[in-house]
Image (cartoon, rainbow, N blue to C red; front, top):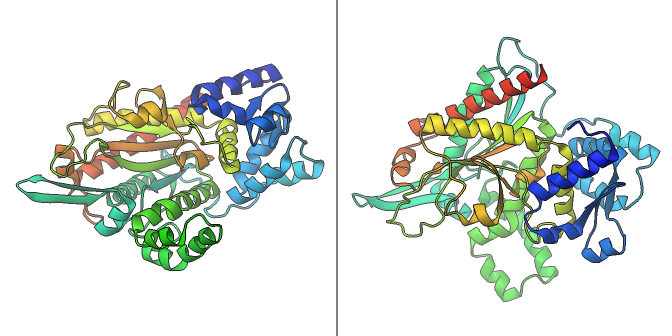
Length: 420
């Protein structure tokens, strides 16, 4: 973006927020963009009463971007909440302008110049974490179909995503890139713990806190403890994504690829596979009703608004979706389709690319392609995918990894061309 004047900035950020970030207009009560800068508010009454939660003046944008790049989310949130409507002090401008050491990950890598991805850092996030079918059922990310000669087909997404990430890392590394995989092992969270270990070590303190704060009655609490899937949803899923995001942000990649495989949500019966097969990708945006109610959510809104990664995310997703079509021989989901979450919880950007306020998307500082390939519960895809093993990748999974790889190559070639 080449905007220089206050009017240019004002108009650019308002248009961007209106077009891609705000799915429901009720969220506009939480922010304003005017001649002073960008301001968030804790409520509509705070906005009407001119009580800013955090105001980023136009000449403070680069300081705030630097803060997002070099502080973890906890530190960012503390600074965000105490800023109010005042300007950063001289000492704060100096302090937040300093590039601090990363939490994890290395410095920029510059390999041999003839390799096409030398000098680039790429983060791969293989979705989910299960290492067996029972854990996959806790996550709710598994396929179980009983339609082929009465044999039951069983496999789970975490196995597919990790296999894809490992294959893709090998390709990217050979091309000169420095690559991070957030979840390099099967069956463990990014913290290194299994679900069982997390339940024994981390969960009790979280549960006691909720009991003390009377979020649950004692009777309901005891029932809740018996359902691992519910514990995963309430206590683990969001912190796991937050930790993945902190690791990725600390690594400071040039591009992040979140690897997922899709499933048709309308299929409920075990003996009725889907007739649909498609690909799609997501980028950050599309805040829905009640998704800016909390301070951290408004911080993430500012992150997406100010980090200027949207266009690059869309560009990377465009090239990757093309490769999905070419290498997998499966069409991209059409704009007019049967999926409620694309209509109700997403904003159409362009062919195969949607803005959506997913837990990982809103937390990242880097350009992102959140890939959703194929439909796992499709009649023929399930046959291709069920045979996958980490040590013996299915041909179909190899094709997915190659599609990602070729799309990434095209993306960085286009970035180089644009700089000339």
